[in-house]
Each structure stands twice: as structure tokens, then as C-alpha cells.
Image (cartoon, rainbow, N blue to C red; front, side, top):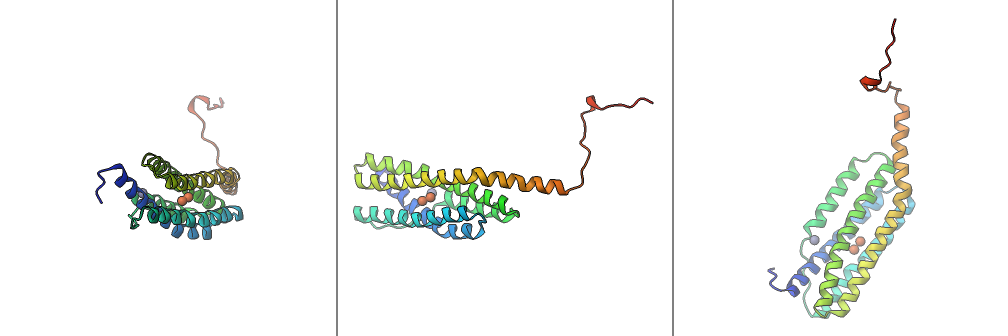
Length: 188
Ligand code: FE
Ligand code: ZN
Ligand code: FE
């Protein structure tokens, strides 16, 4: 679809976001299954419910405009999700995996925050006041989800860091290499 006006661009971006929300609805259950922290699981579960409502809001905007909604593949978010899945597969420690899940979930939220901020502003400019309100609601929810993840990361990142430290302790102690200038030399 070519976009020669801001309205067309707005419609195109909303279609893209509709696909983005649906990709997230598909991706979240996998992240929830892989999460070890119960708090993280419930935060993601909560956001899954919220995400379903966000997809419905876009449907509502289209029905209010009397326009048919056809999803446009969101390639940007597809990449963010795919990268997150790769990192998740590589994380073996539970806490490290949780930290990886938070990292990719926050990338998703920030992507959405950027996109919803834009379409909210365009809706205002185009006189689509009800749509602007709906989009603002979603934007607020994405920000809230991001803040919740920030909170969870505070503890989980530290646990992830300690996991690596525990591993180091199990390894045989190795003498630290010294800088040549500080090497103590025993004189016979
Ligand atoms: Fe969303
Ligand atoms: Zn997109
Ligand atoms: Fe979100």
C-alpha cells in the first residue's frame, strides 16, 4: 500500500501495529514457559491479557473509520522477537535466562512505545480524537509494562550475576596475571 498522505501513513502504521500485537500474543506464552521467576511469569501473563485488548483497540479504530483492517507484516518486531528467542535458547542458567527474557521483553515494549507515540500524535493531528485516546491508553500500558520489567530486573539481574560468580568459585583458582611493571622479582 502506497502512502501519499499522513492519513494513509497512519492507516499503514496501525496495520503494522496490529500485526505486531498479534506477534506478541504468539510470542509471550513461550517466554512465560521459559521464565523461572514466578513474578516474571505473572507480569508477562498480565501483559498477555493487556496485549489482547490492545489488538482489539486497533480493530475498533478501524471499524470506527469504516475501514477494513488488513494486517501488514511488522518486520521490525519480527526481528526483535526472533533475536530474543535466539538469546533465550543460549541461556542455560535459570536466572540468566530470566534476565535475557526481560531484556528482550523490554526491547519489545520500547519498540511499541515508539510506534504508539507516533500514531497517537498522528491521530490527534488528523482529528481522530477517539482513536488518539485509545492509542494513548495503549501507550500508557506499554510504559507500565516496561516499568514493571525494570523493577523485576533489579533483583533478577543480580541473581544472574551471582550465578556466574558461583560458577567461577567452582573452578580451580588460577593465579592472576600481573602487569609486567609490578612483578615482584626475587633476587637470589
Ligand atoms: Fe502491545
Ligand atoms: Zn512494524
Ligand atoms: Fe507491550
